[in-house]
Amino acid sequence: MSGGEVAGILVAVFWAILVSFLAVVLVRLAQTLKATTRMVAEVTDQAVPLLSDASATVRSAQTQLDRVDAIASDVQEVTSNASALSTTVASTFGGPLVKVAAFGYGVRRAIGRRKSPEPPAPERTVIVGRTLPAARRGRGFRGNKN
Image 1 (cartoon, rainbow, N blue to C red):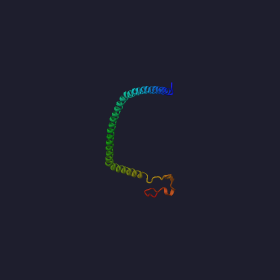
Image 2 (image 1 turned 90 degrees about the horizontal axis):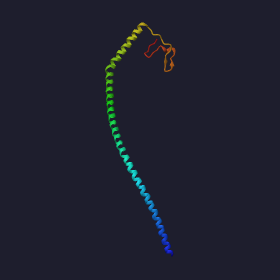
Image 3 (image 1 turned 180 degrees about the vertical axis):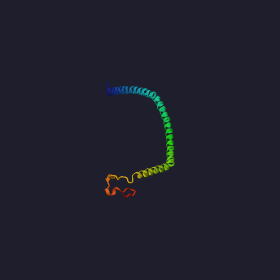
Image 4 (image 1 turned 45 degrees about the vertical axis):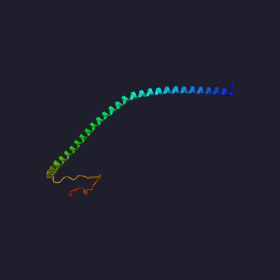
């Protein structure tokens, strides 16, 4: 055997090892692709029902939100009606009731003064945490000088 023949045999053996290695890699790659294809098919089979359930849930939520919106608009209308009613009642009865209350207060005070000519002076008057001296106690906000 000559050197060229030995070199040819070595190259042929190297190529055979290389081709065998590439064949093993391709077989493993084919198995991986098959497993991936199977997994994608299973995920698709499970995802389609989940998506339909999610779509139904979103539709139901939209229906509930429409109901809540209708309720909120009704509450807003009731609130505005109650506000208008309150304003009407206050303007209709407020003035006369204040006048009646003031008249009643005046009558009670007049009857009270008739029974006792002078109300007893309190021992001390407290204004914002202070006690007024005795000289200023008899004077009220109305200018009474007792």
